[in-house]
Image (tube, rainbow, N blue to C red; front, side, top):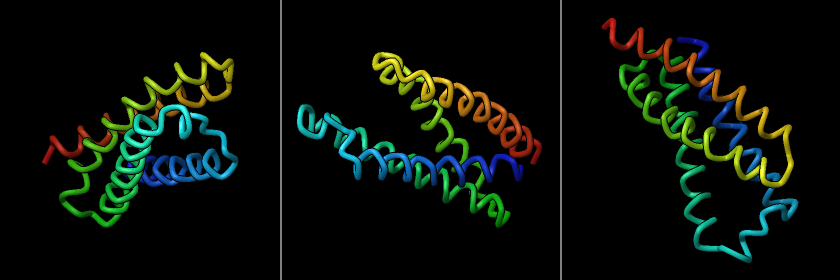
Length: 121
């Protein structure tokens, strides 16, 4: 389960970093064109990132609630990893599409590890 814990911590931290970079470099035109929609989207992204980091830390600390929280948070990030590549594909940013596909494959692996261990209890 260490893999899943670190997946959660790293991906959650990278979500914060990616959005901080996009916002700092003013690379989110939707702030002007669709402020309400992007506001809700950002809230969802930050809740997901917090959930991943907290769950990963809890798993490393062997907290009983870490695995169910991880499964909820990773479910949220799987949704994002399926939907987000469409935005970047539309813009021809194929590196981001590839990144999301790798993250999705790793998420599935992490889910298998956590679910297997959690259900065995």
